[in-house]
Amino acid sequence: MDMGKGIPDTTGNVRTKQFYHGTRTELKAGDLIRPNNLPNVGEQDKKASYVYLTSNLDGAIWESELADGEGPGRVYIVESTGPIQDVSNLAD
Image (cartoon, rainbow, N blue to C red; front, side, top):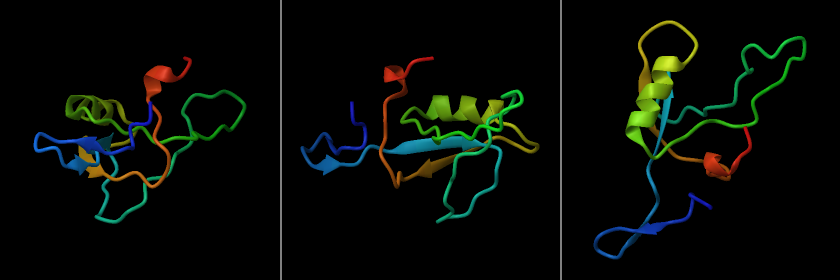
């Protein structure tokens, strides 16, 4: 399922689905969010190949509370610059 495609709103106009990103990082408008190092990966220094976005505000709030770092959880409305994939289609 490609969640990045436009969807019709109640008036029939096509709009882009709104996405949220939960984090503890303070961001400014226009900042690019890049994947970070994955925590607890053992001896290998693996990098995440994705940034978690959700169309569910509650999910983004929860993600911000679980995020590494100090300070309050923050939720941002974001725009994807790359492909979007439904995580329910991914293996563990």
